[in-house]
Amino acid sequence: MQVTKFLAYLFFSAFIMVSCSDDDDSTPLSATSIPAENRQPLGSSSNDLLSSTNFTSLTVEMVSVQGFEPTITAVNAFKQFLEDRLFKPDGITINQRSIASSNLAPFTIEEIAEIENNNRSLFNAGDEITVYVYFADGSKSGDTNRQVTLGSAYRNTSIVIYEGTLRRLSTNPNAPMLNIIETATLNHEFAHLLGLVNIGTPLQSNHEDPENSGHCNVPNCLMEAAIEFESGMMNMGNTVPQLDAQCIADLQANGGR
Ligand SMILES: [Zn+2]
Ligand SMILES: [Zn+2]
Image (cartoon, rainbow, N blue to C red; front, side, top):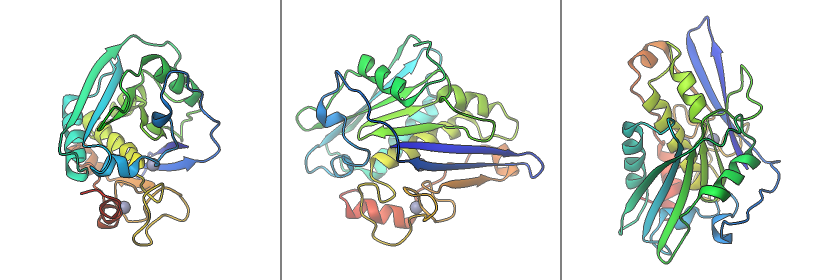
């Protein structure tokens, strides 16, 4: 399953609308070197990530193309988001390294999966669960002026962030700061791994957006398919959307904090 964010610039009203929808018709991803338990469907490891029942620690392997590493501010905010929601008594570790460009941009999701095959080095072992996040030096194949993909959660423990796209967007004078865009995208995609919304984590209340499956219908929720940033707020550049109470209740019912 791919997660696509659509970004439309509405020039005259001076705000940016970001929306995100799931695409259920993705083709099966090849996997040669990834163990079976780390190449399951999106959302199927939600309880393993949220609770300490099967895994007491989490390591996030962040692999960035050289020059496209996330900001330190975003990595710290992302780690805090995980600390706030997951029960991992033996700790949450973020392991970062940089690699050379694949020179494949723009990327199909199959190419992103092949890059994972060639570069992911950490897999579930014992009581430690692992998640792979790749910061790509370019955009997703198929982006248009009105539809821009910021990131995809494409397997149970795999995320891609199109860092080349995030950096380009952040240069718009009305855009949030880069670290805000990075944090919002990281948190949103990881929340899909946690099974939101209704992707492996059962609903405790009716808040799934009927027009955008896998997303929340509460205004301003992190998991909303459409988020509006008013120009003044964007100029301040300091607001990352949060999970609303109904999304948090879902996570708590599935073993999370
Ligand atoms: Zn989404
Ligand atoms: Zn929500």
